[in-house]
Length: 434
Ligand code: CMC
Image 1 (spheres, helix red, strand yellow):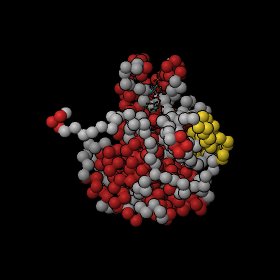
Image 2: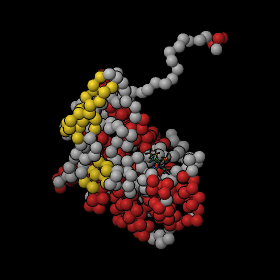
Image 3: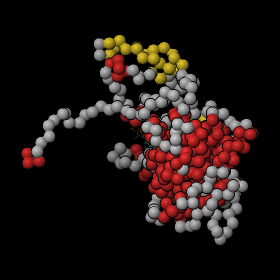
Image 4: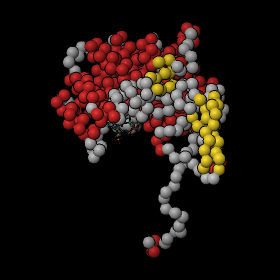
């Protein structure tokens, strides 16, 4: 990646009896950044920013979020346009390569992904080691980590051709592994990929086909899931993407890095929120119980939070949530759900929270996870699979960000510093004297 940041003056201040000058860089969109990389050399001091609330960890040209406006761009294209006009593989190409593909590039990319969807046949033995009641995300962490043991011929990160093959393998095999995790979880035989199906249709086929019966793809549902995948594909330097970059910065192979990202995504403050949001809506159950849960969310003594609400970056309506809300209505209509009690609770909860002073003051709006649970459930997936579906889609963003980092000639191993506040240096005390 060639750097695009432009020098825009300096930040000057007085610190520790010295005049300090640090370069300031401008971005295409978003705030300028003060480059503090020489601060320690100049002052002998570190900066402290737990949770990275004011710290850019890298330069990136893939995704941009304007949290105040509530917009999300993939390579400059607004997410709502891509969700409406593009499809998963075209958007994946865009994230990886920087531009939308022409017809020939699109054909070649689709071919490459389609012909990497099968996994090594011994891979299925790996699943038998897991308990049947294992959470599919636990299975995903292990199974994706194991890919490097099967595809050792694409783990040399210094070889561009191997990097490209690893990228295609990750995107292609993720639906197969996710579907295997699902089938194992529900106790059904694995279903092999079918090359005449599109990416998302093939995933639905591998999840829902059984040997005893043909599975008919419902185009409306497949399109809705494809849109959901596009919405989840990338999201700047979120926790799991930063995890993938950090793991990759040491030179770890891409399969191991994606496994690290999956582990991070599982947390309920991140990708686990879609499962938690649906479980919360089920627990609330009826509209009359909403005030009780709103009161709990506002009570600082109670750890309960409204799942699917709030975001570190969006201080406005999450643009993905808008598309997701529409997809939710389309899916419920397509599966013939006239009156969904869960949707009724969700719509009313959103209305009440958006008018409540606590949520208004803190800019807490619904995020993508608020409606995704209801939608994925209506598509036929159990809550345990929701974060797996998120991981499937986010794999494209993870691998694009990993590729960008590896191809950046200035990349270094990620190694944060700390402010140490533990015991001062002291001498060992013999056990008899403690
Ligand atoms: N319910 C109730 N209060 C909340 C919520 C919530 N969902 N989210 C934030 N707050 C309050 C929080 O208590 C704090 O109040 P105060 O200023 O009085 O202490 C204030 O809002 C700011 O919260 P924060 O925890 O400092 O904000 P953060 O940026 O560190 O956290 C978050 C962002 C997403 C972790 C948080 O909003 C949250 O836990 N939401 C619920 C989980 C969720 O839906 N996560 C999915 C995120 S979107 C999917 C993805 O990209 O991974």
